[in-house]
Image 1 (tube, rainbow, N blue to C red):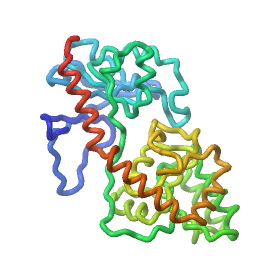
Image 2 (image 1 turned 180 degrees about the horizontal axis):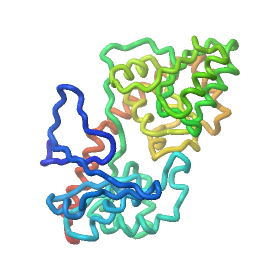
Image 3 (image 1 turned 90 degrees about the vertical axis):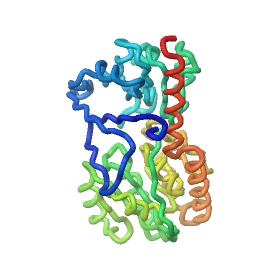
Image 4 (image 1 turned 180 degrees about the vertical axis):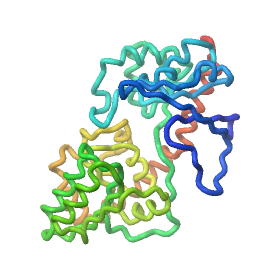
Length: 335
């Protein structure tokens, strides 16, 4: 994006610390926030006044970020909402809560364009009266840093924050049932979270320290890439988030269930072509056995996953979707 325009990126959560020696082509701005009732987010600054200083704005389009979502109501600066477009959370399935759809539609209709994380919401909002031509797809994705040298693939990987809803226990129980019956790949679990100590204790109490390794949180991209390079599959029984794209980018098929919590990232998986979507968590025993007995099949799926990522899901593909939406909003300003 910064190669096409004079770009300023604003953030509210976390920090903007860059790796040593890294340079960026855009300006960075911090917008502090207040949160009310654990859900409603308001920026402390006057966001409407801020947006007026720019030719156009790409804004996070979550209806709980009140000052963001209401910007198009106060002036004519072209606004693109970049958004998931439907309800989704750690506790609710994708698009399961539809009671706020009417409000989303009303607010989205005021924007100059919409850029969704997937193409799923487009038909939904066409039916609700939003023009199809103002809706674009900027597929949510992540950057990967593949290693230059290939490693032997002989492990299974799980990545992400460790909490009960993610279904870590499903994987642990499957390993317990299959241990001694099959030559199981080592399982690397990367992440931290509320269940870290419980999982650590479970591994120790079942004497599985040599088979299941709890690696903790890893923020070094190159170090994490090493684990991906060794993995036959990346497994997450009950959640399919951005790790789906990260896994595909590293050439590793992602395995989850059809009812997994997702922000739409699960739609990138083409079943048994570049990943696996199981009907239920009880099927994990069989898929682990299949990995043991058909290693080459999963290596080939990983190659297909990486091909799909390289062709359609790299960060520049997301940027192009945003740029197309931004261009449309500028060209159709005031219409």
